[in-house]
Length: 118
Image (cartoon, rainbow, N blue to C red; front, side, top):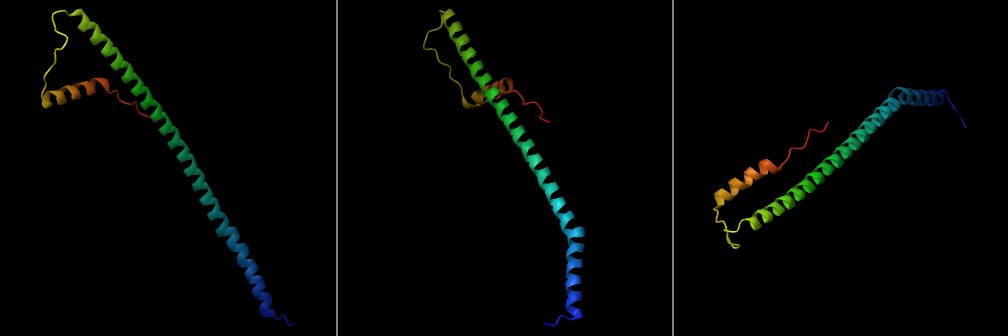
């Protein structure tokens, strides 16, 4: 088995190229990729926390709306019982425009803005 000088230089060139690329290219690129992944993970965890917080606020808003509706219904029933002159089967006749107007006014009153989330 003959090992000539060219083979030795090729082996040395390969080892030097491997060391050089590993030191100055592969390791910094891998480090940069890992930093970006950790930053992405951090952002995703912040997004999940904010989503949970917003869902909690939405649930609280919904519960307050239910309590408000119950309070309004109880108050309406009490007032209705106190007024003796109005028959029990009295109905309001509203057109679509007045219904939409009433709904928009009530939504402005009832809907509470969600505070700014940092």
